[in-house]
Image 1: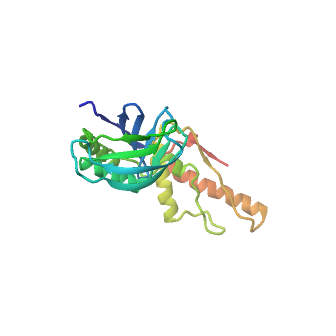
Image 2 (image 1 turned 135 degrees about the vertical axis):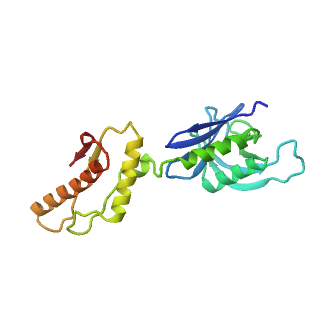
Image 3 (image 1 turned 90 degrees about the horizontal axis):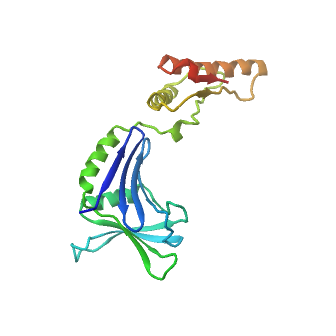
Length: 227
């Protein structure tokens, strides 16, 4: 009855956290623009660096149900020693929704026996429904996906294509949602063909084209620096 799942929500991230007594935390994370992943977090280095097995097992009150193996996973020496990708993370969620218990089993670092970290399905279903609502409201991109965005102009052109406009629209949407962004740098470049004087003007035109589009779509002018 003490089993709990905690949901943290924002436009940037949806996170389901489960405390594992004697170990640390189990976390399902869904960042904007990405898919669901899973990791274990602990200040105790209980697992031996190397390989561990990931299974979906029946809880103790469901004897006779065979475990479902999800494969081998890597164990590192980091505070987040186990990181699981989307396919396995979704299989873990599926198991929890079916009343099963995803379990990581690893050789112990300082003893001969295994370390077993098991997730409880109790109280998970309601949290998962709220998580799905959070995911529906996530932004389409995250900061890492747009922080070094590139607009590839055609040869000797400063005109934006439809694909460029779509990319800039994503950037505008993210900037408007994230109040911590203080400045946006727009750097203009050309290749080496043509004269230096022409290329200098072309690179300036390209930077100004992008900057003007951002300003026309609600980004404050004092946040934008063209170079």
